[in-house]
Image (tube, rainbow, N blue to C red):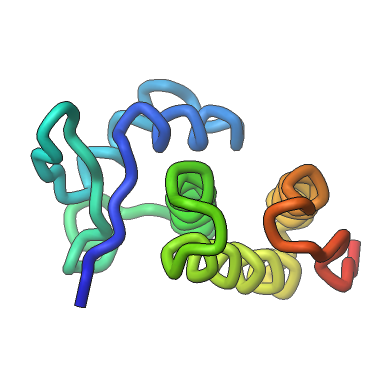
Length: 129
């Protein structure tokens, strides 16, 4: 199975767009596996859970996963398998955020979803907010 990866700088941007401080973003980046992709390094999901090396809150884990999948969506070819997986993962994270009471994260994901409507052809996430 192919491991999905994203450029480090894109992941940092996605995290900071989600209101994560630069210091905390760097701490989160350290939890990922870094792989040499030739011209630049990329991040792949760690094999171990995010809580293995540093305790993250449930919300921080959801933010981290959202940032990762947003980075995947932004750095893959349109209609590729990776893009479709990213869109599906992000849509799922929206509903998890709603159900756990993280309205601010759900609103952010919904806004991103609406802004990227041309990618997936769906204007809403069956919004519950």
